[in-house]
Amino acid sequence: METMQQEKGSLSIHTENIFPIIKKFLYSDHEIFLRELVANAVDATQKVKQLASMGEFTGELGELKVTVKLDEEAKTVTISDNGIGMTADEIKKYINQIAFSGASEFVEKYKDKGGEAGIIGHFGLGFYSAYMVASKVEIFTRSYRDEAQPVRWECDGSTEFTIEPTVKEQRGTDIVLHIAPDSEEFLQGARLRQILEKYGKFLPIPIEFEEKVINNPTPVWIKNPADLKDEDYLAFYKELYPFSEDPLFWIHLNVDYPFNLTGVLYFPKLKNDFQLQREKIQLYSRQVFITDEVKDIVPDFLQLLHGVIDSPDIPLNVSRSYLQADGNVKKIGSYITRKVADKLAELFKNDREGFEKKFGDIGLFVKYGAISDEKFYEKAKDFCLLKNTEGQYFTFDEYREKVKENQTTKDDRQVWLYTSDAGKQDAFVAAARKKDYDVLVLDSPIDSHFINSLEQKLEKVSVKRVDADTVDKLVEKEIMPENLLSEKDQEALKSLFQGVADNKSASVNIEPLSPDDLPVIITFPEFIRRMMDMQATSGQRNMFGEMPMMYTVSVNGNHPLVNKILAAEDETEKGKLAKQLFDLALLSQGMLSGSDLTAFIQRTVSTL
Ligand SMILES: Nc1ncnc2c1ncn2[C@@H]1O[C@H](COP(=O)(O)OP(=O)(O)OP(=O)(O)O)[C@@H](O)[C@H]1O
Image (cartoon, rainbow, N blue to C red; front, side, top):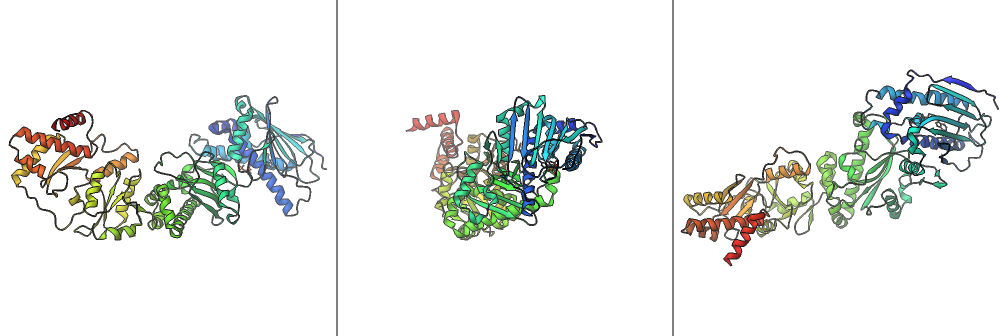
């Protein structure tokens, strides 16, 4: 065994203040010290295992593990491993120089940008992150090399360190943190356990804390898909999200070129509430949890999925703007997008019926993807389904065929009709169905955006809500019914109803509808209504401000009751009739409320 003596030295530091700076920058994320030190300990065990497999280490490997110990009285937290260990020279090189250069590089880079969100928790500051919580750190280590002298290193966060021979029986490293007075929260067992479970739940070797192993070293994503059953994937889902409903299906990701990535993505039952996203995709790097804020790595719509992505190729120690420009990160986004689209296409092709049943739960996701990602749309256009009021499902092409005959306008455009609420818009749906028009159900919060993007993408298709116009005008045909009323009668009706509506947002039209249609119909012009809907769902302050919804009052010139108004002698009688018909139209659109509704009911009762 080589002999060594105590040695003192000074870290080659350009600024004396590095530790206070580290402390300040990492303010919000002190807890990652444990992630960093445990990850180093795991790496050390992996290294000795690798040496053994290459025949460079022939001793007893033993059961490789990492142990975290808390000593409340001594105010220390110790991270121990039986990994590769370090010689005195290695400590000098790896701890005094390399680890330190990592820390000083960090400070150099970010000293002016301490506030930039995102960098902080992601930056693997490595060994020196110990000084965020410790006033003094000791290392006891014994290298795997037989002849190596065990050493003890100590540094109190100043630029001075001590290194000296020590006694240590076992191969490996103990890192002893003397917790600083301002970090005593880390002297609580429950807090340490919480941090270990957050970052270390799937580390590849056992992590022991308070006599219990806290991790599952072989999560499904690192296994071979061929060896896994559905139960395994479902059990893993429960492990990730104990309180969630089972997912619908999943994709096992596995790629090693041009970047390294494994993972499992699950499709949850989304229903219609994509605002309520509690569970998130978790990002790991070699089984170390990094974050569940993946918005710079995974395209927005994919964030509706759940599961795990593990990639050592995602740069974590850089700022957000850099991340977005990073080539690997972009490729990862498009790889996942392609995999997800392929999986959906395969499900659609192999089991159309099953796919239709699931569509209620994944439609929101598919539509969101189709709107926001051109490449996804290219695939999704063949499996994105439209459902009609009869509960039948169609692809875009199938639907085009279905309505071609009956819903093509005189200028050769198709009009696709939809309802956003089949119950409320029942009268309009019924009118359209009577004309043999098909009506789609598009009632999810994303649909106003989806419809807009459909119109831009599909040639010669307009999409209109059933109450966007009177039924004859929804699909403008060659032959429009003629107006039988005289100009004078039309004028008279117009000013009568304008008076009754008493509303600047209402415009009155006299129209030659069928006598079977309702006498007065209130409709909302598609374009403005949709823009307002879109702004409401995207939660922006909108350019329409508090503007009331514009609507059209269509008076059916061919209805007997309208003729009765014209025939009435007395002006008050005319007014009364018109008011009653107008209120009925409001009622059918759910727009009659408060004292107007009460008055309407009383008036109606008194006529019976
Ligand atoms: N428990 C340990 N056992 C053996 N060597 C260790 C241990 N902890 C640290 N080291 C050595 O010290 C070096 C520096 O560690 P540090 O954590 O600062 O940086 P890193 O692990 O190389 O990178 P990162 O910044 O990503 O953590 C390691 O590369 C390793 O060689």
